[in-house]
Length: 174
Length: 174
Image (tube, rainbow over all chains, first blue to last red; front, side, top):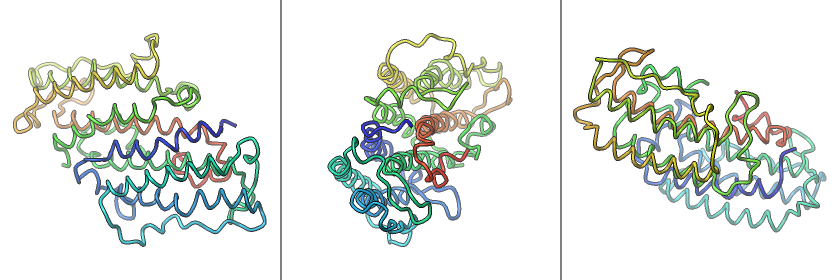
């Protein structure tokens, strides 16, 4: 096991500002591109991250600490942000993500005692029993997955522009 | 073609500081991990980026503008940084990358007239004729490739920690 609470929070607290730094002020061409039909653009990825802050991570952590395995988690719809009409600029969404993540880190720090709760379990609607430390690890890797997705979506925009170098660039191999 | 000079430079100028923001102050566990035997850790990725700034992008751009296809580019050893003994902390390397990238962006802006030079060609030792705009596009995607690599290496560390969520996390599918 590599997980520890302090190191996990190091990533969680860096993600919003890293994205804000990388994406703020970029030309529209970088922000509206996606990987083709049915894939998300950068705005949609940020909306999905915000949705997770609201409906997924904290509610489930609270569920584990307070209810254990008495009831399964309410399911989380990973695509719910796509039904909502997007409002505001990407900068506004990045600020919203930064604010809610900051609040949520405080909530986690108040809720979870890493000497006491990490092995606590809850009931995932599909997987069955899951540990609190697995949920926290997943939150971290979920951040990393979506940072990597944003980077990959941006690279895709130059797939043909790089000409013959295409074959040297690992990011195009998927 | 999606490439344009201004948008390409937007990415080139953001990469070092984005990495600096994301990586500075991280616990050692995040910084020394790799994806197994023969793969790079984060320090080695940053060294490779610095090596590219010194020996690859600017020399080749100058070659195209000044010599055209009269001679092939000198080859660039993508693994040369692995022969050098690493010195200094990752923070020092990030600062070095930031400084040399800043100088190189100034050099590009002085060297390349985007109304004049983008279709200029040089002779790649393997690919043959390549265009200046393809080299610039590749520089951008090369940044994105290595940011994605760093993110993937970090995620790998929690591959088993996430428990059953493993199958939902795209970053583990490679």
